[in-house]
Length: 405
Image (tube, rainbow, N blue to C red):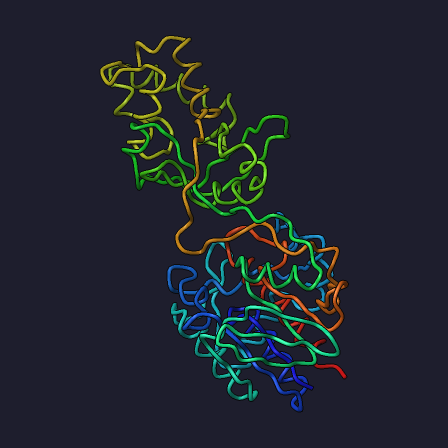
């Protein structure tokens, strides 16, 4: 049996290794268009590689995917985050869990994961070829691949794991598949407020962000929020960008963002704090003496936003100004006027229509012998290791099935 894997990323490598390990007699060749394999693995998590997330219940794990969660629910019952941790442990790579659930190699170095996958591929006898650009694929009795170099390769089975590349989409369309149009996911929000941008670097550990889109139910996420030179970022915003990816694209990245900077307190509790300060700190200025646990610069910006001058004392805070301040702290509105990118870990929503794939084996329902894994599928997760987990899962399932006689 000859198997060719197109795409030398996480899903492609994992699929090739799973196939070659389960079926040692199979001849497995992995083709990577670029000069280097595992490019995204190398840069993920700031060079540390966020391998997976410490969520070991398949049903709970599937809830972190704006697109593809339902299809992955069954897939995760066969290979989930716990299996990923166990697989790497078998290869001698230990993972650690951080406070937010993200899992990294204990070395904090993505090269540990790259080396592990390349070594596993070598041990399994996989031929890895870089600079191998596939231009066309035809299907008769078997698959024939035409490379840019003019070389032609034949295989009995084929695994496409080309990520969200236009060339990969063209190849899979030529084999009968339909593509859900790709649009960006996981990005920061551009907010044209010079005063806000002056706070670049200020962060809040817990904020509630709500995306208000026309003709659509508001989307809501809670988590850390970071102010940047362009607007807002951090897990709360990145998760919102993933869940709202298509709607934001359709609306040309124009929307309202409502932020509650104090999600763990009620409006009555905040009012009580302000009234107490009005009595006990009467002679002190409001801007310099915040009653809530927010970074001082952020507090000053929010009080300035509702027209409270830097000289106003707590004793002089009017009832109307207090109401405005509470509103700003708990329901502040910001105009999103575009998107930034999230580092180099660019994630796309869109890809092969999931109804055209059997998620028990990752085999195409349109083209027998073709299997699909990773970001070529219309699957994307929120930030935190979830996109890699879907790559390991779909790659493993494809690899287990593709070598079967």
